[in-house]
Image 1 (cartoon, helix red, strand yellow):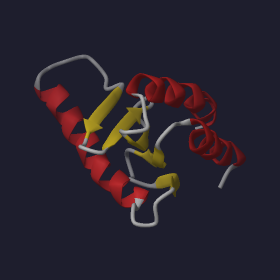
Image 2 (cartoon, rainbow, N blue to C red):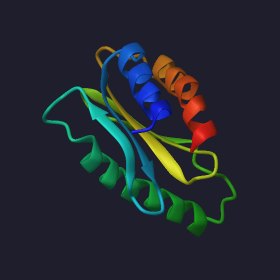
Image 3 (tube, rainbow, N blue to C red):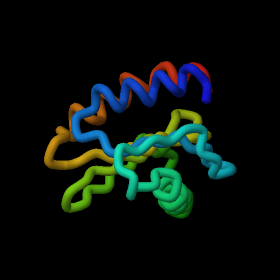
Length: 124
């Protein structure tokens, strides 16, 4: 794993309240560049594979509607978790982050994710 990806994982793990799991996945191939989970029963790479389908479906919907907008992020709220799928500006990869909703603040989680992805964006 590249040093900047290690740093990204460490920053997310250490600083995002309620952190559960994170991945960075390439949209065109589904290849997961990096993944980590705090829970042994939560496989972030499987989650990313399914979330890739969510991203593709949303891109298809945007195209079908004739919209010129791009996806910034997709938010999925579960009863006990928040899942954020944050697409890169060029749409080539996405960051998937899962947090415990009882420990996380959505606004702060999104802000921290954007802060820590800056180094990743410049190197991918």
